[in-house]
Image (cartoon, rainbow, N blue to C red; front, side, top):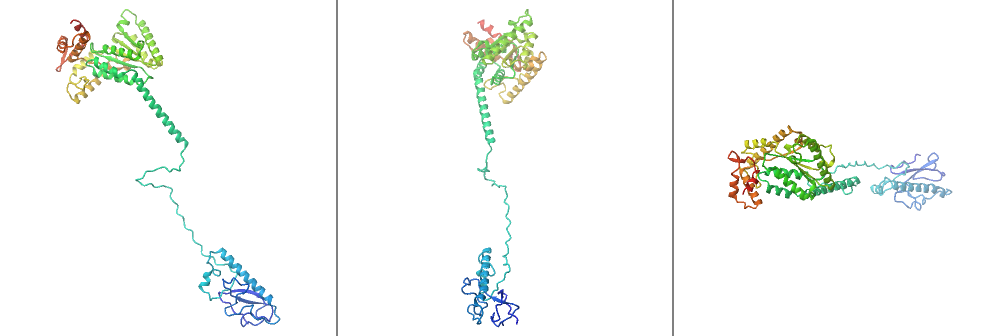
Length: 474
């Protein structure tokens, strides 16, 4: 007789047949099967007390322990395999519960019991069905670029480490800035030693009719005396006709530098007609001039001061003296010769200046200290400045053809004096001699001189040179 086929939800065990007197299942004849019988057991998942009351084989069947056995059948030997199967099933369920999440599984979770509690289940040793694996989500790679709002300020993160080299660089920049500031202060201190503001006021008060020349002289001195260390000396060349105030400016410069340097030996005044007369040999004059200049610059270098050397009547100097002066300006000379101011006073180029002023009398007007001029307009002032620049360039080209010394010189032309300037010269000289500077009397004395009359203006032929002689006759 064929044993009953188990239901799909039941589990199957093969147990040995212990004898012909034992009946398995309902309607099973003894000896059914070839040496073994198929036992169908259906145990629920919640049966944790299987050792005390084994689960029934099928719904409606009686338990094996309560089933009456035939007389003479070995009872304990039949229940031992059943208990072993129950324990084995319980262990498999526990292993499945450890492997799978709670509440998941076809046989061991409460979800299966709740789905169909009346359907019997059969135990098998098949591998449990694995739950479908979740596909891992792809993590989006965040961009490393930080986008700042347009209206916000981009700041460096605080956690970023700054290099020590950057701090050293900032310290170096601070040190260099401090040194530059200190150098600027030292420049101001060096210029204040020579009181150039006082010199400018003295020249404007004592020199008449030459505001442009006075301004250029003071500007060149300010630039040069801003520092004590120089790469070349300053060479000022004052050129103009007789009586326009060149020698007077030279005397005022020498007086001022003697006062501010507090040492008369640092100021040298050299007159070619007096120190090197005609019968004397030019070579002896050259050696004497070289020795005197060397002594002055050496003394000034020891005292860390800038000396002043005024050479008047340069047009009367022989060529040997001009060559010696040109040698003082060469870069091969020692450093003390580079730190000096040379002022050359000469009538060379006087006829050229006179002709230029007469031809451009309408525009070549020197600006007054108060800013007034002949045309009373900014256009006329610009025309006068352009005319003076043109005069300097043409005069330097003329002087360079005579000697290369004038190539390195700063040319300062002195223009002709008009009649109003001559009147001021008379008043100043009268006040110096003790006379009352009456305007009418000064104009009367000024009318006795000779003038160039061009474009409604009068320019003195001899300048202020005859003023002193006329005042002495009073």
